[in-house]
Length: 418
Ligand code: ASP
Ligand code: MG
Image (cartoon, rainbow, N blue to C red; front, side, top):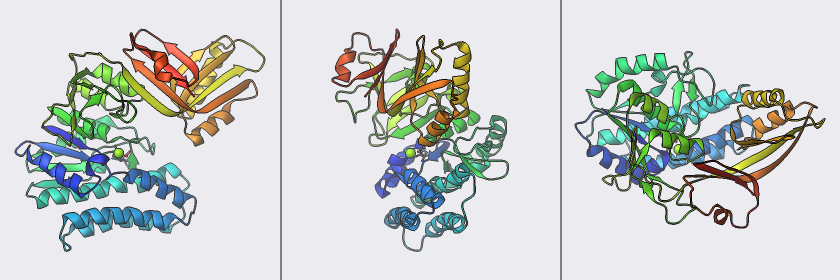
């Protein structure tokens, strides 16, 4: 069986849904499970709605109306006015109406997941209805009964035993009956609340299903021809990789390449299931295949930019050397506040660390440093990572920006620049 994943950009309008159905048609007769994200930028819009609700902002209803209008415009282009999908979509949105009537729950991450998940629940209703309308027999599946997580809202941890049992017991029979369409990014707790798996988590969902169903492959359909050495939005003359190893793909996502969600590869690697990255605009083109052994050529380095970085430097107030005791205190604070270090460097008197800015977490982190530490930081920085950079002009890349931290190893060079 095959697993496909369609991201938000692939279903951002009616033409995208039609294109999806044309791709799926080419695979008719195969067992196929399709994981779909929220349409276009819906998740961002739902995040805005969640904030407005929590802050009691007057924008709340305007933001919600925009989200609904956007979806109904797509529905109107695809279906006749009496089609049952109108009710399905309305019944999904009404969950938000019920929620925002009440005072916000104290746990904001919980609220976030209950609201933001509506994006995927609606998009999959539309996609499944459209596939059925075009004659492709399709079943809509609520993923929350299959991907079981703990109640770590916004970053649910998958309970693999329960998930594997649910998926492997029930999905094969469904696949005998037609295509299955389900939501990416979502999970369910044992109390039947909705969780999310972290932004851009739909790739991970696809890999969970593939692993539990022992799929032949996973294909993620994107707006790029495959995995490129650099983001074409920032660099000209990018090259596409035909093949990559799982290990190289993990390295790339670790340093922030946004082509695939970082958690995606491990389950696939464990089960030796290849991941194909292909263009939804040119479905017959080859794309990139990620697998155990690959024929890799790095004629150009892999360049990964991460924006919105903070560089924090921490030293002991009494001028004592940074010791293992200090480091373990510092790492504990990072772990407690869920902040992941992207680069670190120690010197005798200070420890420097670069990470993504999440204002709430950063504030808590700073508050956690006691009077024994002195901290300084710079924000709005960019982290540039180069893999396989040999013979490449590192300084040319930075031009006249100032380098605040630099770290070079055999395969990887990193610079934090202003
Ligand atoms: N819709 C979610 C997001 O935008 C999940 C995904 O697209 O993978 O983060
Ligand atoms: Mg998305």
